[in-house]
Image (tube, rainbow, N blue to C red):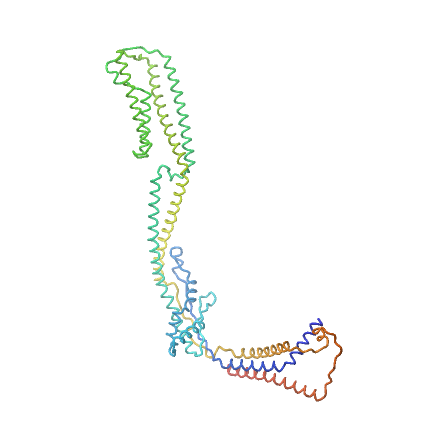
Length: 519
């Protein structure tokens, strides 16, 4: 603590040695600051207040039906973008600020100065806006604010109609674009479904689910076939126990010969063909295969009938069944059983073919389903956007009608443009004391800098610390009466010089106060 106090004392004593340099700097700075303050021309503030009424009677009634813009945001954007170069140039012409301009450089300087000086302030949440402008001529400042007020209102009214037209044109353009996109997506989806009609893409089943379903149907058909074959074999065993009676056949019996097993298979294939034709076209592979099976069975039947005719020609008397009702009933049951077996065999063959196709198609189904999902997603996105645009277009039409009836916002001039009677800048009552303090501070800084540039030792301990050498002795100074008198005169002269600076500033402040306050 003692070291700090000793260092502070050394600094103050060093500054005191260079006090006249500090006084000179303070006087120079004070004179320069006072001249600058008094030479600066007076600035007059012109202002106006505008109220923006954003309330509308129709807004609560049309809430959710129309596209209502954020009026507060629109006004805020308008106030920020109002001070643009085109508007400032227009304002300069309206306020006759360009009458005395002689060159393009002067015009650029004027535009920059006006842009920096103009201010648009929002007053809280009351939708109040204050327009302000500072100028040396109060009348000119008032004209600028008047012109700015006119531009503010005109910009809002003009932008409202132009923005509505632009929005309507943009929505119509987007509707046309998305209508074309929607039609293209519909055509692509339709074409894809036609190319992959066998996959049944709309049944919300995956390829593995369809394979499982076909496998289940195939297993059930095989089980039914085994049951039918067991039933047929049982009927055959019963018929083997019956003894038929041989009777001569009537002439022409060979024309009514039938083969139950083949006839049953033919009937089953025809029923299967009818079912396939209800689902597929004539050129479908399943339809073509079914017709080929029927043709082969009919050819086999013709060959069997021909063989029986040859046997009949060799033996005139054919074997005929006795009119035994039980035997005849079992024969009818056997015919039905053979027909059922043939039908189930055709069903098993059909399900086996379907199963093979499903196994083959399961390899390509994921890619096809992914393409189908992508097409559906594109279609849904385009349809959603299209419906949204149609709704916005209708809402915009209703909003345009609302705007023509009620208007978006009502601008009211609360305080007309007027300029202050007294200058608002520069505030000399504040600037003069600040200039005095700054001058004194500059003087102190100059004294401190001089003491550091040209240091002086005031005691033996400081000299020993700096030099690092031993001190042999100290020579004392004895002041005489003449030296003390001279020292006193210099001290008085210093305080008079410093006091004169303070008094000059005090007189300036008092005079300024009297002139500005009228006291």
